[in-house]
Image 1 (tube, rainbow, N blue to C red):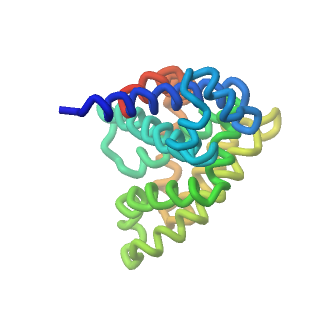
Image 2: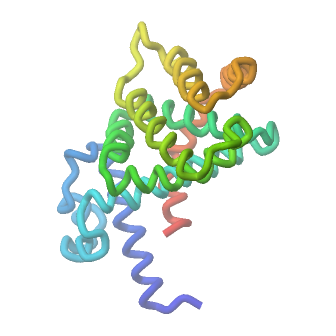
Length: 225
């Protein structure tokens, strides 16, 4: 049974993360101050600092939940369609690209997350476990440290695709296609498999999935904090 103190602390944490999510998405990470989050959440300015230290650490905690939510929803979308680990990995990344195309402030959140050392290293460590299980069959001689290094490289590529919005020449379809080909070549996936993955991804309504991830984010935060 949770102690009353812990329950109250978790409730406060949820209030702060809810307000931070709302304000980051509505106004942008850069334009949102801790004071704004305090006013919106009703949690004291000093208490937020005691809980999260600073705005960067607050974002780091929030991004953990956003990525976790994105990954869980990806699994749910595909669980009745395919058990291909490679397809799931690509689906998760393409979903992230679509999410960023739907909201410029979310694009900023991800861009900052891939830039800040405290946040980016969390992402590298989290994703390394995943990519090792996915790509070990293509790179059997690689160890965890090798996959960690490749994750740093491919995360840089992901950031580049995130921060450059699609336009009439670089459409979202071209962005997704180029991203998949670039990343999977690094992991030495055979061309016929890459073509198969691209063809499968093209059949999914990724924009609709991305909208659903965004719309259910607040609820997810409540269940995980």
